[in-house]
Length: 245
Image (cartoon, rainbow, N blue to C red; front, side, top):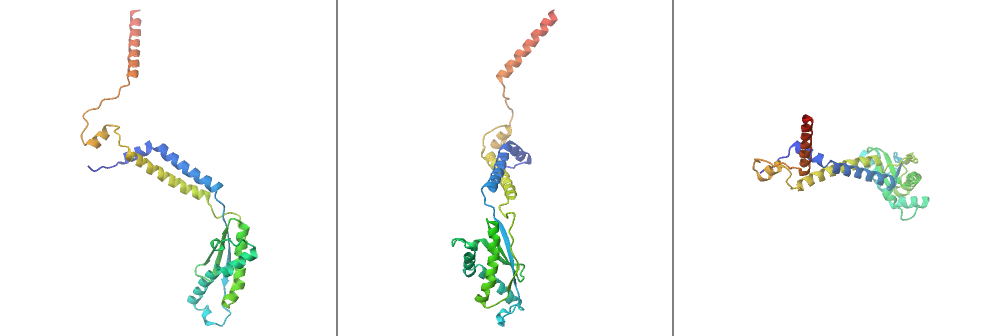
């Protein structure tokens, strides 16, 4: 027999497991907030911009009037900036440890397919992030002359130290955790309701057996009934005494 679930049953399930849903939501949100504020390291970001000007070389391969060639040249620059030929020199100038992974800290990309290249650095130290970005741009400007025999790179803007971290974002993390906790609570609530196969009322009997219920025996609280009868008899005796007087 096909089973259908009404909106009333859904509402009753949510109402019945409301404490569980609320607990999981609060727990997930609080955990996310505690981790975001106390355990995740703030990461700062600084960016510098490099402008690829018209090439001063006479070689036709670097004729920037050709748009396709110009874009390919910028893509080549993007790769060179993150190559050991540039980053090793940056490490030496900043006296960074050899194990420092500058490649993972630096992101390079062109701005809307223009001649401007963004060099973005993320680091736990805001001052160091700006230094890495500026040093990378300077080293690249100097070394590209030796690497490709061109002198068509200038620094458009220098990186400045950021005052606020770009990540983590505690409020965003807590909002995501709230939604995830709420969804998990609702899912667990319906799962528990699905796994609960106990018979609680007449409707469960009709649903399980497919037979109509002809009658039901109400549950009687013997102690409460005895107290009620004793109270009634006492009240009746009191009335009798009042009428006799």
